Image (cartoon, rainbow, N blue to C red; front, side, top):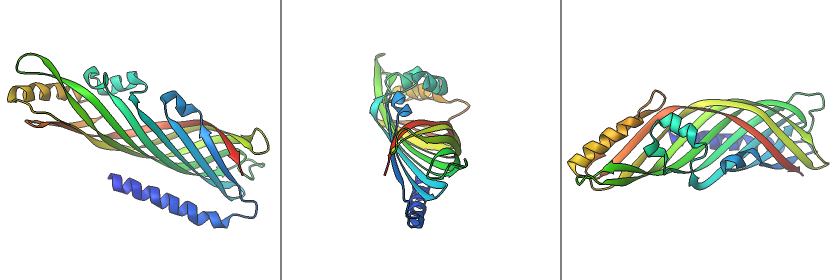
Length: 244
């Protein structure tokens, strides 16, 4: 699937949400939330939930991270197996996750209690790094690489939501495994001699591993990497929200 297909699914999800909204009874309820857990990775995540039936709701979350050093750097070191790539790397990203929730407890009316449901997650990750190479004079220079990676995945969430006060709620997303794919391109422009090209080509080949399929191109104008891999993870959350 290409990025435009991911965006198409996103817009389709939003359309379904908007179509369901008018079906609410007179006890319409909306909740805006702030997810505390992503702050560990320097990410801000906001959510909006709307009840569409006594025990069913739609929930959408948006997350973003300003450009900064890689979070959980050891994980990326193990994945890419080349510290030259990760040592100076920076990352920023945007994610969007629509989900449907079904509240299963007897007292689940109005979005309270234990819930389960499917979700879709889309992410856009921008990465930049300085990759070292050896010049004809034997000096070490760097080629600036930057680009973007798009990810998508489908999953299933379980959690619990409960009152802290009349209008204040706590949403505990216990577990949300998801699986899909990722693809993207990272490139850098720099004049390279034939010898420098060969050295850089050999260095970039070290990025290959059993998980990520990486295709590298090096010529006189610079280098580019095309990556494709499975993509998965686990969504979790501890959000505090206000209902109105």
